[in-house]
Length: 161
Image 1: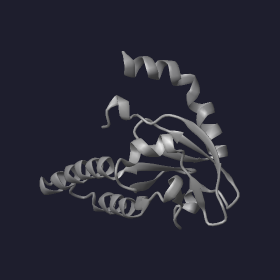
Image 2: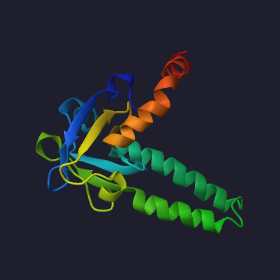
Image 3: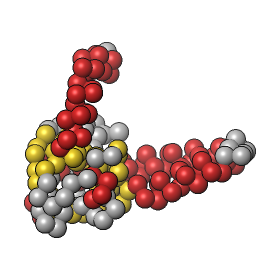
């Protein structure tokens, strides 16, 4: 988990160009990238992609995979092979390493475009989500805000208290 000083905050409206490129604001990209232009793009929820530092993503992924593997070795997932396969399929297609080019430009790759649900020229909202950057289909972002903004005070008090 990043330090509090590394948290990523902010909100910016952007448009996808004809090549499915968008510009990530520098103030959001810098804490995510450090010295490398590499990051991980992940399918978060329908209409939302997330960008992670490679190190943070890999650490989260390694812990989760090791936990599943240890349960398999201990025989605790007997009879649940279909669930393990489903997890494998989702892990195989959920994330991809990408690079931010000059001026924080990101190309949304095929397979992620459909998940985001925005055509070239369409609007997205880039959100600093503390530990990562999220790229939202604008209408999905509004729905998410409507659903979760009423919980903000309680969430803040719970995490800060």
